[in-house]
Image 1 (cartoon, rainbow, N blue to C red):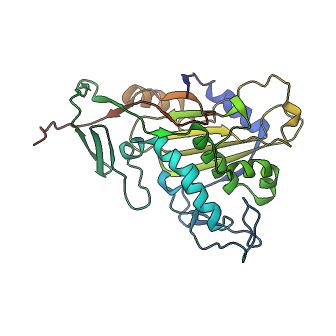
Image 2: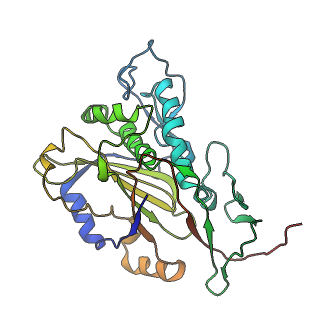
Image 3: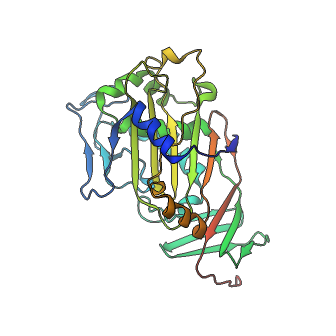
Length: 325
């Protein structure tokens, strides 16, 4: 899996691009207090197309995986069989891909903030303001006391990159209006495959943004963006999800609605605007105090298991060093 850094276009330029080319087919108000239940008009699974009583709909299907902190965006148009498949084939790869970040960010999954332990390094976080790092592999942890930063190199778990990409695709299809989801019937079949293949080739790219600080997106914020009309030379659908300190952005391939783009040189879509960029002075002050965000493009096209080492930077107010008994 290859990664490369990139520098986003100016905020206003990106904002104009999305305003001129896309309508928002799904957005969750981050201030909403009530759970959001995605109800179908009839009891039919939007992925396999089967209806009750041929399949059951008893599982609590989270449109965004619970491991990302989603507790209240629930889909009732996902059957038990598909729900189990997505957990085994997709969400497991997403969990391994994110690794210790979920612990470091304090992301509360099904029951609590997960612990992370791998190759002599353990992260434990029982509260939003305190994290315990236990290292028994003999390596020294570099600590910058002046800037109050710590950077730890973490060996990666094995995951299938295209399985991670498919996890994000599945989230988008879960959230979009049912009629729009019909534009992705071929992609749904791909999501349900029992082995990981890649019909979209090198197009399985993902923007990854890490914003330093304390829980900048306290609730999961997903956006499903649909092209305004088919005269525009931009991807038909883009998906963005923000949670804790992370933002991911992908495009969702539609072989029917994007056929007019075949053979054309389409510029790389810009990064979705981040709400904190709106006030330039405050954004600059944040970066000066906490640190600059990281912007990466991930190539998630691989169909074989891979392990990527990860460097985690952590800002602290106070640190205590204790010898292991």
